[in-house]
Length: 170
Image (tube, rainbow, N blue to C red; front, side, top):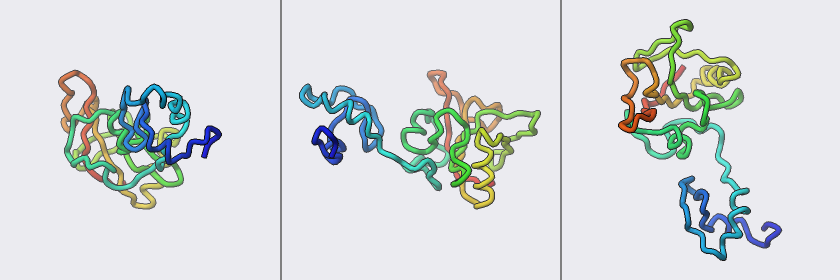
């Protein structure tokens, strides 16, 4: 229970005009006027999910599926780093990576079933090292911004397209 006398279970069942606590999808205008006072309280309660989720995407995204947006990848837990290319930490490792650039200076190349990728510790290199040491699978998403013959096509609306290319190991 909170100070207002409303239990967490009641809040979880409440409809929210910001985002659904179960699925993370926006649901505008579902609150009645009398329930609108719950919105500030609901907004402070966010469902905690782990920062790393190893294996296939939580929501079934088929290998090879494209047309995915970065926001969608984040909302379904497939890639939880909304800005960075590497998701993970130096304790658990890396669970997903978005490949959106290649630097010839760093000898980064793409062979579809394999690629070379460099990252500083600050940008996720520590997480990549832990996944290497633990032999943890990493979900790979390629971006249409990638200068590679294996990059997915740009979406019709000229927005960046992401494709799930499966589980890779380092």
